[in-house]
Image (tube, rainbow, N blue to C red; front, side, top):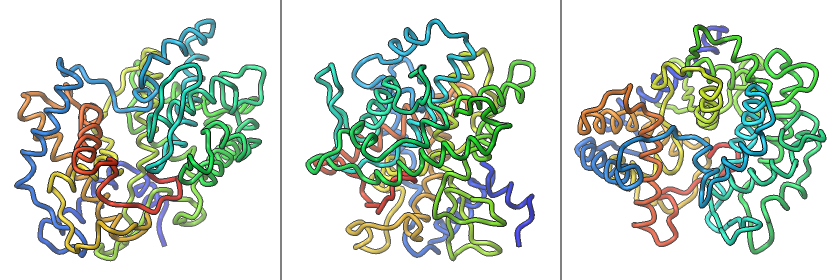
Length: 403
């Protein structure tokens, strides 16, 4: 049996580092089944990431790693969005941006290697995260997620009434253009619509919508500041019920939490990847309201296929079995749990090494900027260099709700 205190702990950023840290210590002792860790490759890996950072951000003025970067792929869509939201109050504008970010992030699981999106009105074609971002941005602007005359929002009713045909059309799906995990994505958005109705204290009573979370978070701010983990906790509390097929304790859905047999006491390993990615994506609208975000490095790096792929491709992680990289693995397999856990800790090591080499501290270069600058882009770049189709080094059997 788990106490409420233990459940709260598993849903914290500290637990992610702690539990992943145990597996990392075992890896350093070569006591894990699937991967070993080679820290002699740490400085070369950090140098590679710095090279990518300087290419994209020569002045090292790096923004947060968030969904907002993807909305700018190819052209400036945020200028368009701000123009359309110009008549709203600052609070209403932040609510609309929360609506967009929350829906878009939940649609951001891996798209697969073949899917692409042709943006209407331009000749631009996007794949993977940028494609999912641009597609969801266009759907948002068209009112796909709204049941209201105001198209530029998502609300409970609009999300619950969403159909697979509408979502498939928005993503331009066809037999020639398949998208991984469409049913999982649809179910996630429908459950989002249901859960925001069930949490009026977080999302509002009269017209529940994801953006109602802005009002709640404003009550948690103090002296113009709000802690990043406060936002993260609200995301986990408010959206925990949307995840299906996950571990539950006393009726509480744990979300992105899995098991590994090498751990004693309890075998739980939390990651909360999409929830942290979403948290990072909600910070900028809060900053636009004048709030200062504190404790950025309390949150962790994101254990997904670009960051994790970087660690494999640069030799920080080494598979122990030759066939490991030649077959797909389910997200709950110990192969994937190990890989993700080691990635979380290695991202901290990479960030610390980069700061040391650049003469910067965590205040000037928080982890969320290292990710953006950064490890995610470097993971994509090295994958494209090593494999013609740019796929990650490890293949995941995804249901569209984790990666």
